[in-house]
Length: 248
Image (cartoon, rainbow, N blue to C red; front, top):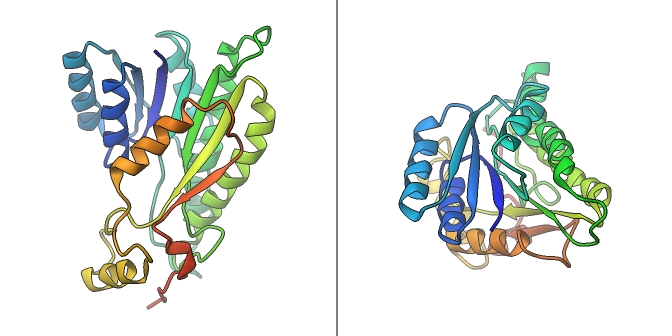
């Protein structure tokens, strides 16, 4: 079984981490402040007889992705990466600062490049087979209907989608890189309940995206030898309706 690095261990990351442990994989959890969530996964791994290492890093800082990846490799070669780390802060247009742009870019896209460059060192070029899988989490709205007041977030997610295609070429034929672009999974804390209900009504399948579906797709992309450079929307058809949201 593989040794897989997981960035982001709350919510979706927690569910995916548990699934991977139950399938027999070992994990390295890279966290910024969510040590308790990492410890909970470590306990889950202990019960299942799997190893979970914890690495603290602020991926919004240049160079931290590289440092964290180097530390992750100290416990053994890394065969997979699931990258969910992502700031999600509302910043009104006209108030966007350089720090907002840098924080989002490095946490979401820049750190991905830093980490994969390190993990590539575990690839054996003499073996003509897929040896590394990366699954990153984008956003359904990037290429369809970005909504207002999240410009730094969408710029970084757009860079992430582009990075998937570029990294897929860089890593071939020994590594595959793909993205999942979820739609409505749960209500953001700054979105009123009434607005969330409107979002779900506008979603053709009229329901939130299943965490089980996201975990199943992640597992598929961590094992595929035929899919690379893809951004797969899992949004219940949300892209067919547009954002439906307006700035205050």
